[in-house]
Amino acid sequence: MWTYEKFLEYPVKIKKPNPKMATIVVAQYGGPDGELGASIRYLSQRFSMITPQAIATLNDIGTEELAHLEMVGSMVHQLLKGASIEEIEAAGASAYYVDHGRGVYPVSASGIPFNAGAFQSKGDPIVDLTENLAAEQKARATYEYLISVADDPDVIEPLKFLREREVVHYQRFGEALRIVQDHLQEPHLFIMPKTNFSK
Amino acid sequence: MLEGGTIMDAKMNKKELLKEITAVHFSLIDLHLYLNTHPTDQNALVSYNSLVTNARILKENYEKFYGPLSYGSYSPYPWQWINEPWPWECEANFKLCGEER
Image 1 (cartoon, rainbow over the protein chains, first blue to last red):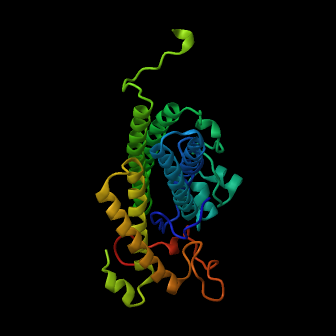
Image 2 (image 1 turned 180 degrees about the horizontal axis):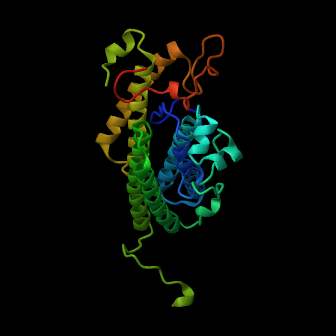
């Protein structure tokens, strides 16, 4: 189960509304490489994971991603709060506004609602951990793209924190993969195992 | 990082205290993940356990003056959990550097 802590993992304090930035930061709320997908991916995969280390890693990173989801949602909220209709129109954020007002909705930057098709839970420990390494890299790249188009330090600071966490998670998943490979006595080779029908 | 003595002494500024709690809490999260894949790293475990104590003292001190931060904490009358601001509001958060608004 979970309990709630009534503070953010890292502060989000954006004083200046920016509707344009809101409609792209939302990518990490509900987009294909966002925090919602990351959390549900890891929390679903943990049921079929093996080794105590890798199970705990999925459980805890999946939990931390929920805290990141809250941070990104806070960013979108603060970027939209207090923005006038004129500012929203001028920023090209009318489409988001018509669908969601100043609310926070899980959608990609290109407007596609959250889709679980962007991730897998395959029931195979090696497959799932390999997917997670790619997932952390994709999220890191997304944060770097967001940082490259942001100009407000209040927006850039939390994005930098979130990017850094992707790097740490990538490291932990790499360690978990190595532990599972050792446990299964798999050779450390980047090859696919031979199946019965291909022998 | 604050000294153990000063934490307990007086009513600290709400944002300053929250900043300390956030910092210690983050260290706990990061060490937690590290220990999952390095369960026999005794130095890391010692650091983790000492931060647990630190986090408890800081949280108890905050909650005494500013209401509960999590489930399982005491609340004065009336029920303080519903008090605003919630964490996603600008005014609930502390500034990273420079003066507090």
